[in-house]
Amino acid sequence: MALLPIIHVPDDVLRKTAQPVQEVTAATRQLLDDMAETMYDAPGIGLAANQIGALERLIVMDCGSDEAPELWQMINPEIIWESEETTKLEEGCLSIPGHNAEVVRPSVVRARYIDIDGKTQEMEADGLLSACIQHEIDHLNGVLFIDHLSRLKKGMIWKRVLKSARG
Ligand code: K1U
Ligand code: ZN
View 1 (cartoon, rainbow, N blue to C red):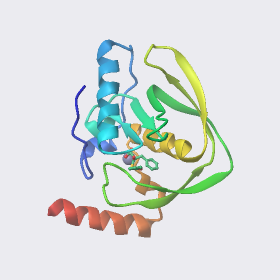
View 2: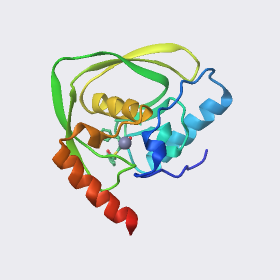
View 3: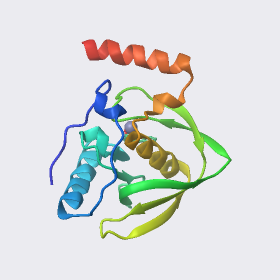
View 4: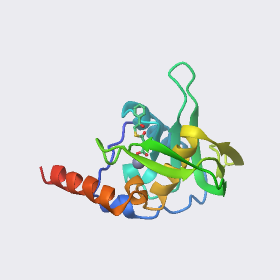
């Protein structure tokens, strides 16, 4: 297992589209394990491959508790259904540290993905897990949570981000 450096905005890799994984190999499983270790160490509840500079469609999530962890490791995840009902939830991002904001997203989603054994699976998520899987799949498409905010709110965060990036 290895800890991987997490990439921060305004790095271009966070705006790139990750490519589908063609074959689940030992290297895929190793990368997912390294991503899980990196997510737990951060600490965070999710991590997408773009955030560690790998443009492959891989995500990890754990919205469980310390007593009952619930690790998800997904290959080529996609949303196949989303509810019309929406929920506003506060989000953070390990690639935009120190800037949280409320984001409105579909309350419930159904996702299809490939598991670490190469099997196609489906799952349904609500609450924090729903926001998290949508946030992580956004990363794979080069989308950040601030893109869901008003121009005013996004502009305020972006100004502060660029100021701290300049040092
Ligand atoms: O993808 C990421 O940047 C990870 C991000 C995921 C996320 C958080 C909140 C809503 C949707 C998606 C994070 O994990 S930010 C850190 C965080 O949420 C957290 C940190 C410590 C304890 C509990 C949560
Ligand atoms: Zn993020």
